[in-house]
Amino acid sequence: MKNVFLLLLISLLTIQCNNSKQTNSNDTQEKINENKVIGELIGTKLVSVQETKEELDLMFDFEIIDSYLLDIDNDGLEDEIIIEKIKDWNDPGDFHRIRIINQTKEYEYFNGHGWINISDFELQFEEYLKEDSQVDSKYIIISNASNNDKLLFCFGYVYASQPGLLSIINLSGTNTPELIYNDNTLLYGFKDLDNDKSKDIQVTKFDKEEIIGKENSFKTYNLIDGWLHIATN
Image (cartoon, rainbow, N blue to C red; front, side, top):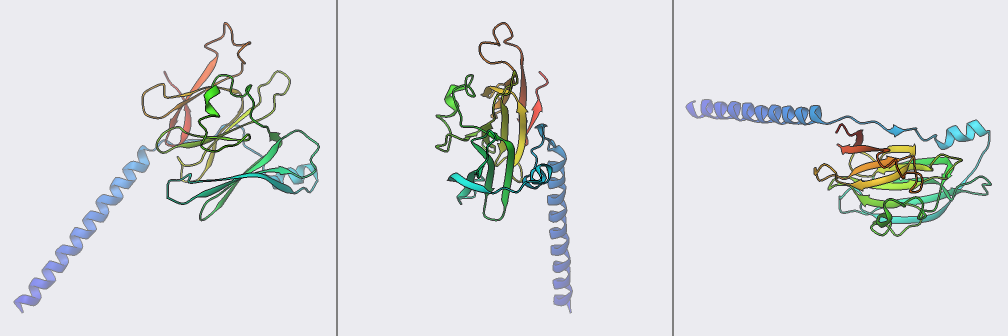
């Protein structure tokens, strides 16, 4: 009888201990989630393929023009990034859709106005960026912003006095690939300015000739928990 009582007591203590560990684990995760900075897209949303078809009352298909294999989420498995353009499209744009395919899901980014082949103009303030890209591509650049953040850069046409579109997708710093920046600006800087081991993004509306005398005419964004936030100092 004493042995039975002792076994029951040990079982109850074990259950209480496991419940306590689970509670502590949940509390720790909740604190981590509370401390995470919730972000949102800087700039304008991309319109979906279906919305564009409905707006134009037009059907169109895509053709693949390039693709790359790269482990974007550090799980030891290669993911695929596919670059596509609209077939028989007369409007501007060297490519219009980026598809990212991992082991479980596919993510799509579409720009009906078109992104363009990368030239010296788009990288006039950060000439080295294309050489350091993790993919050999004339369409996109992929570069680490931190140990957790792998960013994809692509660029749009210059219209009138506006800079071309700068689109930045965070491939790995959020739970899923996310478009974190999409606005008509030039990339002015991509370096760690505040020594937090994460590169910051600087953008400007002026090219090298226009910015003379306006060297402070840029915005700086800090990369926090995968998203860009305007720098406060």
